[in-house]
Image 1 (tube, each protein chain N blue to C red):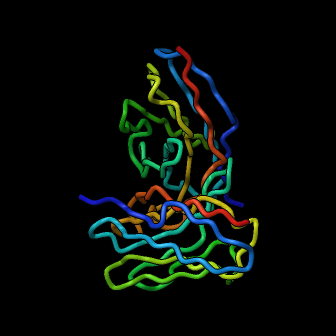
Image 2: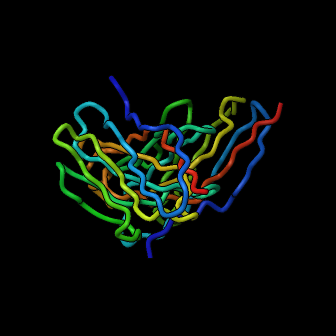
Amino acid sequence: ETGVTQSPTHLIKTRGQQVTLRCSSQSGHNTVSWYQQALGQGPQFIFQYYREEENGRGNFPPRFSGLQFPNYSSELNVNALELDDSALYLCASSLNRDQPQHFGDGTRLSIL
Amino acid sequence: AQSVTQPDIHITVSEGASLELRCNYSYGATPYLFWYVQSPGQGLQLLLKYFSGDTLVQGIKGFEAEFKRSQSSFNLRKPSVHWSDAAEYFCAVAPANQAGTALIFGKGTTLSVSS
């Protein structure tokens, strides 16, 4: 069984640029969540998609947006990058909204 | 406000010694409770979960956790620590019946294992 996979592994951008991070959920999982983990902190919830619809959002500005595709893979888009956006971005999928989440290894985003 | 507190930022344990990592939560009702482990440069791996029923839950890698409603705690334990257990440990909560929704994490406890 293939787990959650994220790409790319690492990414370097400059302030003001835009970035797209990708996530392939675990087979059969219809729910995908994205988290931001700053250095030395626990992950913080950005948003969740359930069957291609946004199903909840954390305290992040609108420049953080996402998509979920019919195959349940997902994208996280961040516009107008700021230095504070430097973090590990984690994707997690679950079989359904009442099942535990399984995480990928993350994308390390560095903003210069 | 809903929150998770892990009082210990860093713990060092000798190999073979027992381990207890503390977790306290603040939530309106009894939530679902989780422990995740993160090795350097990796994502989070689910160690165990509590949904309901027996308050002592068993997880992978020999870990267990005990839910104490009166203390709003969900402490993680292991009887004998191995060097490979060195990692970052996170306690998390989610609304009951919604384990797949927004998880609220603590700030984590770093475990070091000395020989």
